[in-house]
Image (tube, rainbow, N blue to C red; front, top):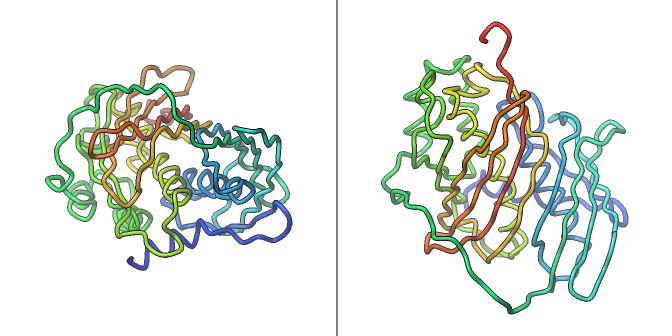
Length: 296
């Protein structure tokens, strides 16, 4: 396990400061606010800490309320809404500087046998055949609005091996394309020891799920993204459904599309597949996607 992955796992290992109250730090981000995937993953960790081991999260629904301050700790308060025979519900509020910045509701379920079906996994090139971030990002250094973007992106995502199966938005700026993006991802190293449990893998997928989800919105309009500077935006809400077991340190295909954009908002849907074709997670997010006035 490399140092950056160990750091990410430590970031998700929240400090308990009181009954149902936890505290977490922040990871440096390319943008001057807390990365949304981080606060969502940490909130899910806090919820999981209050649930028995025989129940895993099957869904979460969340809202981003205010930009998080990356220089200040985040306090997570958990409300134990319900403990039923099969399902458990938790509500988590993330607080900074005395104000809520994020709200999450999560539902947990004991394992049950039942009916089962799924769609067929989409086709994608093998991840080993695709360029790594270290190989891909420097090719587009001149596209980004700041010369430090490449190094900042590489540092921010060092713990995650993420490879684009189709060209990223910043590769074809000004060329509207199909509103569909596909990336392979896994942690950059095996997860072992005390960290190797199903909750950690679920929370790591939650962390990564916010990285490229709105790419499909950008592709539909030929926009390069926040790092290019031809749009400004932020996540508004984020929902996930966990269907089948998976490991975050094994290749997962994240297939996303964008059915609509309007009123300064874009809607993106995603599915996360294991390499052997099992649908593991479904994701939906709406985000603010605005064109800067001088770039309209």
